[in-house]
Length: 267
Image (tube, rainbow, N blue to C red):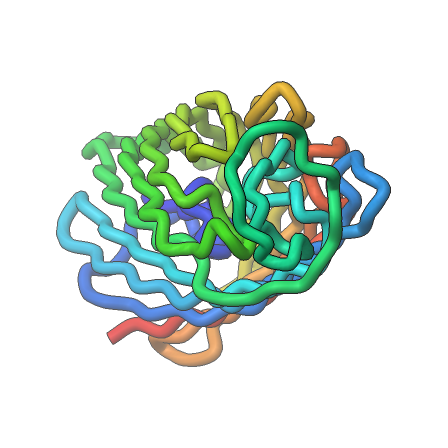
């Protein structure tokens, strides 16, 4: 049983059956907008490219997005509103200089490659209606910190996801995770716990569902992330699948709203 929501590859729920062995590739489009507790609305547009390889009880995933951010220089994709002291940050004119003092919030627009995310998941062999996944993940800091597209440091995390089939078409799922966030010379962050809970229901070959996601604040300046997501996926061919989703933020640590689409094809 596999799910990739916590991996942030935009495959919010990749079904709730064991993944077929082999390689699959994905391409998505994601857009979100919110003020994250600031006076400025920040808009984030990303195009993630992903790859997944499944063999036996193991699944390996990689995702790399192109990202465009328009908004507050203190808002970092995936982390929310932080205190970013980088003098070359988004909207600060690449002025150079050190990291001392407090940098006034400014706005700007930047784009580029985001952070590379890698994950390995082991599905514990179980009988019956239960399923358990153990995942280790790492974020490789490939995003440009001077553009405010990332922190410039690596992150490391682990997660446990649990599934329970209810009847022939419904699956309940939930999970908890912990991430050690890397600090840079300009951004201080805290390691965080996260949790999610949701339900998926099959409609023939399609599926529909909803998920709630929570994460602790990433720093003293940030708010916790709290949001709900609805999704719908359907096959486009014997090996292809299209997924649509929409997200509503419930706290300043989340965007006000977001939406996206993701296509995957197996080989």
